[in-house]
Length: 169
Image 1 (cartoon, rainbow, N blue to C red):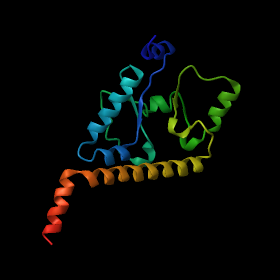
Image 2: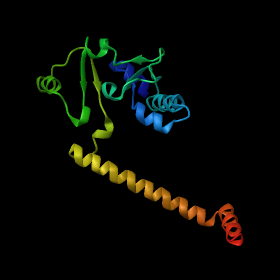
Image 3: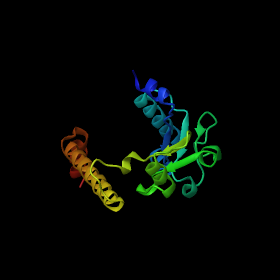
């Protein structure tokens, strides 16, 4: 049975939770292209079309550039006020979720927003997780820069350019 059938059998729907500020930075020319690429990637991964979206931090980040009519925005009040809404914001569960979990008694319909990046295999505090994320990003950037430098040292165009510059001095 494929992923799509499993999701449908359980009555779940997977949607895209996205950060408008990150997409704006990554897709300065056309943020909609990057958004559409994320939708396509997630659809491919779950083998099911994405029809629902949820902007990251809507109360903080302001306007949602991607509030398209052809996507169901799950921050509509019918999904956050009219049915139960639970989120692991900042690696923290609110008391009402913990109570439902302790009682093993959830409503028939609810929205559960999970940030997988916040839950690594090794348990870390939220602050240690951010520090680790920062170190990993810096390390990756430094590695990418070293790869580029090594490539440039042997690149014929760079060699020709540098020789031309040297001869023009």
